Image 1: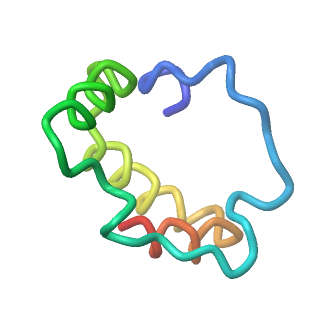
Image 2: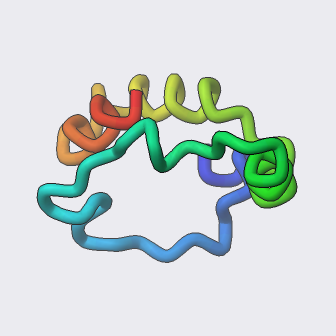
Length: 72
């Protein structure tokens, strides 16, 4: 899965999300310029496919279940 989504250079972390971190709609890009910057950054990453793959991975890696549920 790491190779499929082009994340071979990623570094492992002990906690995949900051404790008590909230994801807010206001953090999403709203203006066209912000959306373009995000598109340039994200490239061809398909977010829903990535989240779906992570949901599948929670069957064998329950330690990521909370974070994956949060981003889903």
